[in-house]
Structure formats: structure tokens, C-alpha cells
Image 1 (cartoon, rainbow, N blue to C red):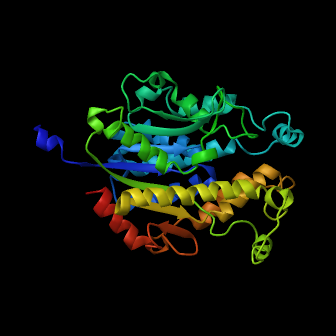
Image 2: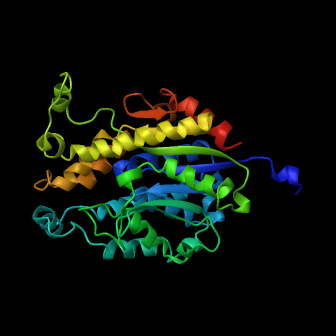
Length: 362
């Protein structure tokens, strides 16, 4: 290859996966994309994830190129993986007591770590077939951003078990113990698109140049969730006032919108990351932010025990909601009421498929 040929930018496709309760939703839509664009998943150059999105991203990256050729099977397996992953956060008696007393994290990591280890085939980061960027945050000693990746040869993190890196990305405070001083990456980047882009850029023409990552023209599909409105209708009515004087009751313990401040943090981060990524990539960026109000409420019910006396826990409620929301036909693929297919406005199914065909598959 000549120097001129090497200097030609190549399309580098990044699939960015949010954390939080949106994974059960966007994986069903990802399956529809693969059905209409066979080979979509195999075309992906890098999988980025935060929190449980890191778990799904690593699941994809653990598959061989041959396995990725059957993208529909891999995505269906990822849906099963995510359902099992979410099942670890169903409230039982012990986890409820830990959550209520506040002296221990609600869940322990041993069983989850064993599941992740098995799902990834015991691979270390350096053994993953696909490239990954996994977002975490370090609170031990000097607070700092921690991004696990397998982009740089010789990086000590390459010897880390992939399951361990995922645990450090999804150790949400209160819910899971910290892992070697690391906590859930969602505290600053629940939507990891900006972190993924910055990481790739640092290796392509930053101070850590990796030859195979030079001269890239990045294309990014960012998938996640964003509630169309923050809080409950009763709280929204209060916002019509010129000044809304809320205390900790409204922000944390309002009966119809528990843990509102966490919902706000997750949604504000997603909107901010999409704004920055679109500003940097222009038409090379597409944000698919589904209205996950139903999924979020199911997740909150799991955390707060609102369904403790019901036969159905929060995780099952999320699954039921997804089954009702997930598309069965192309004309049901996107509606303004159910999801915000964000680049500018609501492109809908046809415009989204056009973007994938021209920007991703070409």
C-alpha cells in the first residue's frame, strides 16, 4: 500500500450502547436493523458501552468474525444474555433488607461475575475479537475517568479478564460493591458516545498513535433511551410555575417518581452526549433514543420495591413492556410516540434505514 492510499480516510463504524434499563429495548430494534441490513453487526469496528451496555458491547466483541456473519443469531443471544443479566437485579429478601438498612450494597458480585466469565468464555480484554471501549470511574485515591479498551498493544489492561472490566463499568453505587475502587461509568457517561469518540481519536492522531487506527472517518450509531418527560405528570404540573422550589422529597422520594434525580442524571447525560457527538460528526452520527419511560418505571419499581406484593417484579415488567413495544413489522419500526430517532428531528424508519445503508453499509 502506498503512502497516498494509506492516507485515504476509511469508514470506522462505532456502535455505542447506553447503560440503564434501555438495553432490552434497543436490542430488539438492533435485531430489526440486522434483519433489513444483513451484515450490519459484522461491519462494526468498535463496540462501546457503559454499565450494562458495557456487558452487551463485550458480548458482541467476544464473538468471532464468523459468528458475527449470522448477526441475527448473535443479537438474539445478546437479548437472552441481557435478560439473564437483568435478572441478577431482581429484589429478593436479602437484597431488600440490604437496600432498606443501607449498610451494604443491595447485591453482591460473585454470581454475576461467574455469569459474565462464562458468557465471555473466560476471555481477557486482549483476547476479544472485536474492539471495545468500556466506561468506568475511579474513586480510590485521585478521582479519575477510567476507560477500558483493547486498542493499544502492550496496554496492561489487555491482561484483565473481560468480565472484571465489565463489573467495574456497572458497579452502580448502593446497588453493587465497588470493584478495585471503580464504580459505574454511568455516573458521568451513561451514554458513552463521546468517550468512545475521544478514545478512538486519541489513538488515531493523538499522543498514542496506533498505525491501524490512523486516517479514520468515524461513523457512529448511538443506541439508548431517553424519557420524553422528566418525572411524573404531577411533578410536571409544578414546573409550570416561574420558580419551582423543590427539596429532597421531590428529587428523591416523590411517590409517583422515585429517585427522580437519578432519572434526570441519566437523561441529561444522554442528551448532552448526543449534542456533542452530532456536533463533531455531523451526518456521521445517528442517535436512536427510545422513549423508555415504561422501562425506567419498571426498573425503579425494582429498586424501590413497589411491586414487592405483586407476582411480577420490575424486571418482568420491563420485559413485558419491551414485548409490547418491540416492532413486529417494518411499518411499526419507529413512531414519534414510542421513540426519538435522533439526528435532527424524527427521521423514522425509512430515513434511518437510508442512513444505515449510505453511512454504515457502504
